[in-house]
Amino acid sequence: CVRAQARELEEAAAAAREAEEQQRRLAEQAEEARLAEEAAAAAERRVRDRIAKASMLPDEPAVAAEATQVVVRMPDGTRLSRRFLKTCCLQVVVDWIEGCQPECEDFDLVSNYPRREFARAQRTSTLEALGLHPAATLFTKEA
Image (cartoon, helix red, strand yellow):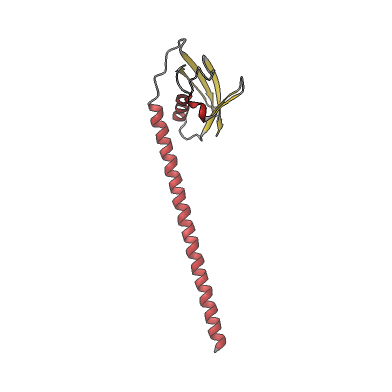
């Protein structure tokens, strides 16, 4: 009789542990689903924001002494080309790139000759001040 009671207690404890474990797994799955949903929503917002910023870019200037020709080579081999006023900030170029390829990852810009990396802090400087006028070929580098 005592053995039967002990066995029943063990079985009840095992069932309780199993139910607790299953509840923990369900909670983990729900949390993972919530995080994935939040990440997808954030990515969608980022794409919308990038497209919106690109729509507010200044008009492309005509070929002139004040215009800087910028060519950007993307990691997938895509080549983007556009003119900007030499007084434009580097952030305008970044907004243009993000508008052309809104799903791209965050990046910094790099020039090969001379080798220079343009970090986020330099995005408020003008193209002329950064030595990118009258023409620059840049590459994106994952930030």
